[in-house]
Length: 309
Image (cartoon, rainbow, N blue to C red; front, side):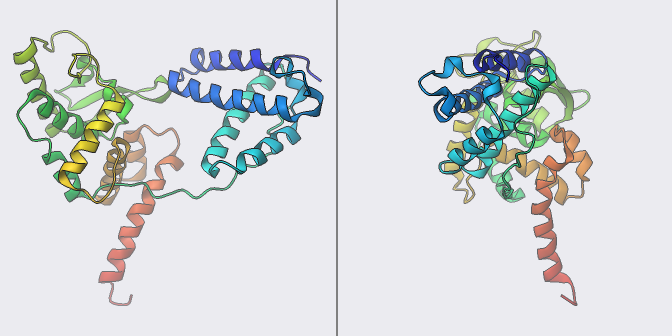
């Protein structure tokens, strides 16, 4: 049994996620929360740990029975998707320990991930998407910024974190593309479309006339009212206001605009591999969830039009 303490190994693992894999601070916080929660459970649940506390919990104390007990504990209060995420964090952690010869075996190796249904992503129809974009049509700096925000989000399909992370020099008007930094720090070049580029230019021109902030030097592309970088949370709040203004029946988040982009691309004939590249998905299976939407539409069209339906 390994006498190596578990808690310091969690800290070392989280450091490796930042230094070796380039994970974001948000992702590392999620891993920390899941692993610390598990360690606290194990310290309470293991008979050998009675009255000793979390600080003395060792790697060797953990076996497959501990993992199964933890999953049973989670099952009473969590959705299957949450349990799967927490198990994934444990798997990554113990594989790291085995790889670095801190542990002899991976106690998660024989544990199956709970089966879960994959919900069809929420998305807007093309008409509703255009209605939403038209709600931003005012001539103020913030109105022009908001129109540029959502034209860019819908025109490129990038994540909201990638949108708010854009800098001035990431936009290449000549090629019609933007450079984004995605998950794990992976960069990719994404087409954005002329409408979005025109809206970005209109916003930055008005911003320059009002504030003197130009595009000759690099910096955040989209600014908040205090001239700092706009946050993802702020984009969500702006979108909520627009949805109420145009009375959309479908509740949608900034990520839902990304879903709308992917769905509309597939409906218009784009192949799955192309959409995968545009979205920056590492695995094609992640992109395949959008085919459910398109297949539903395809079946509806078939039922309506085929003479032998």
